[in-house]
Image (tube, rainbow, N blue to C red; front, side, top):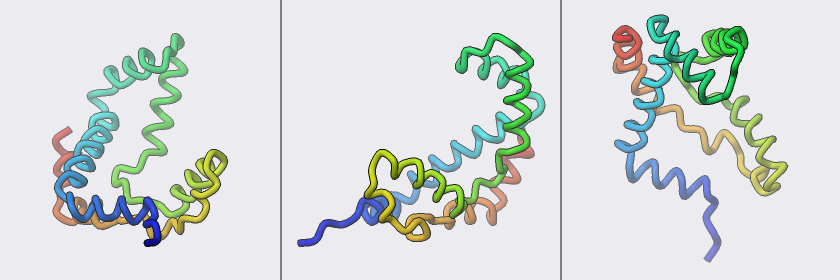
Length: 126
């Protein structure tokens, strides 16, 4: 019997437990909303400094501004981004390069949350 790829196994888990995937995604998006909310900036800067052991507030501010500029409020998976991750992972496990990125990206969860207005409601609450 041929072995199934880990991408197929992961897709099966997604299909068997869509509510878990959606709940994890909701939590991640809520984390983004918290970080991107101007009223939470002091807490985010404090957390950056503490967790990353940054002693210079100017460096923390620079990192915070990078987050504001670079983080997508609607985290739709990007083929290019996943290919970049794949390229790095391939250095540790060459078999990762055998996976066709387009086959493992599933945009349906984020798209559904976006279409139902969940993402907009969440950001407006922060």
